[in-house]
Image 1 (spheres, helix red, strand yellow):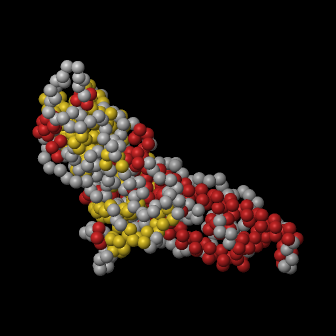
Image 2 (cartoon, helix red, strand yellow; image 1 turned 90 degrees about the vertical axis):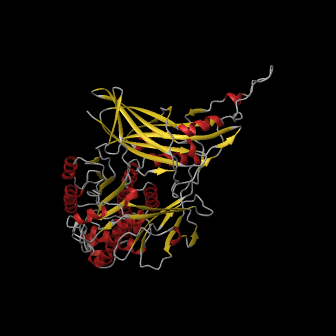
Image 3 (cartoon, one colour; image 1 turned 30 degrees about the horizontal axis):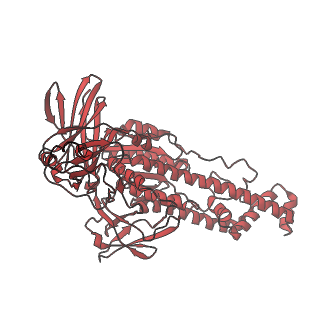
Length: 628
């Protein structure tokens, strides 16, 4: 099921009960987008004291009869900053270990060489990334209850292996899948979930802890093409790779056009003695040159389109997988297994992928499947080796080296810009997978709102500088492309709440306690209740019209043992409480109950509560085992 479909299935189911009060309150981490209510909902209420009966002939104010607590399906109106630019920074010491003890004052952030104010700052460590508090479950059967801890350990780390099967050759792919198979046997823990994806979309398995399924899919992986084959045309003799085609098609490089034209003439001369004689005498007819130039243009267009489509297919799969993993709790890493590729006209798509990965807390790591290699100075063994124009071989070799260097740069930039790790120029692919399959031990989340921000699609360079005097290195994104249009506040507000639901990070901005109860109705069905107890004594209310007002958005979501979303509920709770009601509820608290019809099995519970007055948010986790 796709992520948008999962999120559309958030339905409404809510009930209120009285409970016990809680104590203590924490504050929302500073890296959260700040939001607050932009208007008061409902009609202002009556004074706190019970009003005297109205005199005869007078009508009591309708607001006096307004319900003190109600619910509506519309989302809480929020005001957010939509132009926040996220920057993930990994800082390492001389030994390569991640540094986690820096503060906001230790960083300087520049856009296009101009200093920017860091508005959001947070430090994330492995502990905070994988924090998951397992709540005891309360089992209710036949009117009796008992509390016991759940034995099921929910998933806390998700690793997606993405094999670049259009760019990988058979030898490199076989070495990579062998290393991945060994990694599965040696490195997985009970809380790990692994998926195997391919750029071609063939031979895949979604996140699972079933190693047998993963091994089976690995054995089926082969190089796959995602474009129409370039063979079988009259131009096959002419040597031209993606890098040279880009020089001709997109950069109008005169030398590249001249070399390709000469290559084509000599290629055609192999089957045309008259043309061969004319070339030998230096008297090539203009018509032959014109014909060769037309062939070069057609060949360059075809090779460039095919190369761009292969690169686009990698970006498309990365974007899809990031969206898939945004709906998963815990640590999220993508391992791109590829020989590298170039993307001459896809810079905007690259920037969008980096931006989305950072916002979704997904790390993109890269493994160069070629291992330890020397630059390829000629055509691949499977390609044409009869060079029709040996005199130009040196020029083409230079282009080939430049193209291969840019291929490696793509892997480096994808990893570096998203805070991930790249492994290259090493034959120990097994060790490489162990290194790249994990999130860094610590990283920093910085964000800023650019001054005079414009939705114009222009590129902006980014630079992060440390004020400390220690010998430290920085890994962060190099820049971003401004979008062509902005999100509406409603869109951003919705995404902000969804990000909290489809995460595992616990937050305690509001005093909320989570408890679960279940009972089996028969051997194949059960009722599951998720109880959210709120301590109103520690919540902020706004006084308006004699009522204490605040709105709550309450979301309860249900995930399976592999972290896949099953269903959820959402409702905005409107509170307009009289003073005496607030005083009473401040002592007892309020419990929100959500019911689910489920089958026996292991489930992860995610509860998110957000208020509109103080813009505070709590997110709690729990697990429950329903026996078969």
